[in-house]
Image (cartoon, rainbow, N blue to C red; front, side, top):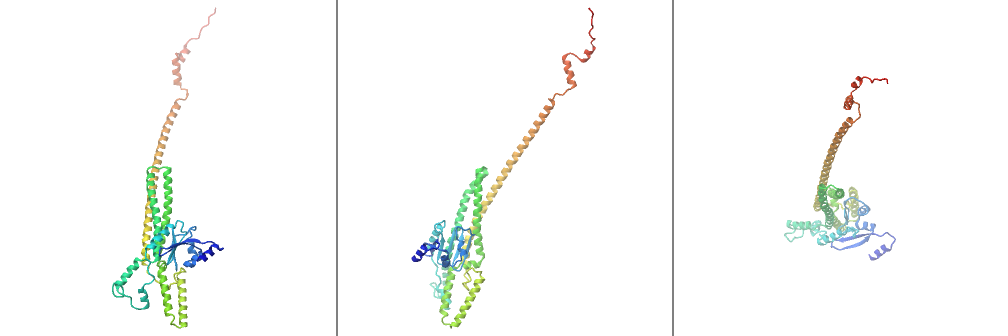
Length: 400
């Protein structure tokens, strides 16, 4: 490993990406792994690894492959196998995810890969005796079933950590937004100002962004719950145990057959595998022929976090309705102010019209117009009338 690491460091190839590898026992390490090495290690195609690149924008997705589960939910980006979890860029904002994985995976017990009951059933013999009763009794089956329900497989516990991390981060952002939004909206309702309007605009932008992110997570969980094939592909431990059991059974019973019969059976199995892989659309599920796991545990797990994401989305919807109601209230207030301004404008226009009429009347009566009655009254005031002036005799002239 050290020599390979030295060759990788001093070789001409491009350096790899840092990945945090967390095992089921709680041990973890930071490794520098290149893409083709990670593809061989997990059996994933290159398109699934591109979805984990933080520099690229890919929609939220949870994809189950033959040997790994690819989780891309907001800040939770990881590759989950049957024995370990790989988190890209562990020194970035994904560091809390690594801490949560260490805390949860180290505290939870690891379920056994294959039980003695399954081996005995495959061999066709009697079931081993259980501590609670006679071998093969219902009490032993119930006890083992309850223990199996309590101890989830490794990939389900890792997936639960990723779902919890993603849903909790979105819920915390929602709570923070609610604490800022409601006082700002109340302040805007009482005092409409440029500062308050700018604060509400920023809050509305954040609300739309968070709502879109929560909606994507909710839609992805709903898509998984509606597709039984995708949920079956995520049972990595069961698939690994099934493959190991099938390999052991073929090695046990295939040695007694003649070579021709063994070759015919192998060819028939390869043909069935090719048909299964083509029927599944190349998603890596067809490699396990006849594998039908129980999806009840995974369905309950996804249902719980689907309800949590739906509750967060309901909170955001309520906040959005409150923002819309506040906008309607502000618009009503602005309409009322506009109506008052219109009334004031009408009153001012009416007063201006009245004053204009009074000024026009005053101007008409103040104009210099010749009126006979006015002229006669002026002459009488001077003491002579035109008739008296005409009746007087002309002055006489006397000779000296």
